[in-house]
Length: 130
Image 1 (tube, rainbow, N blue to C red):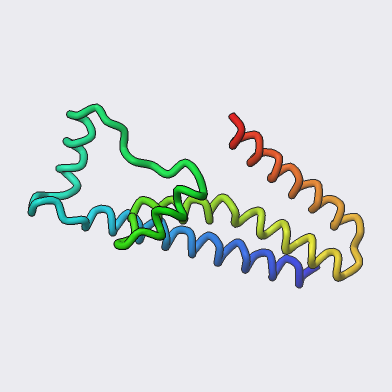
Image 2: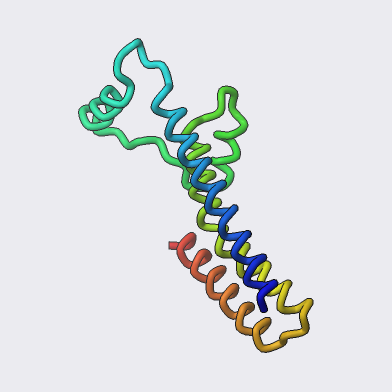
């Protein structure tokens, strides 16, 4: 059991850290984009509130991939990638737990972890559908 705890905790730690780094990097790149030599953050707030237009966001994995494929890379796509990574980190942790429980022959914990993974995937599917 100690081995499973150690492996899962490392997956959660590194997944969370990498996601936070990606989100912070994306926000930093967004704030540093040149816009006519004016204070970028202040200008963006005024732009979006005066013109009543929506802030561009990425609502699909395909959109994120397209944003990351552009040169220069779209900073909001980097931020969105970090958010997706943060959502997928618990899924990866539970998946690693299932593999570890399976390899150690612990059927009851394998079943419990599989039910938890199914619940996570179902919640993502229901959230994406509506």
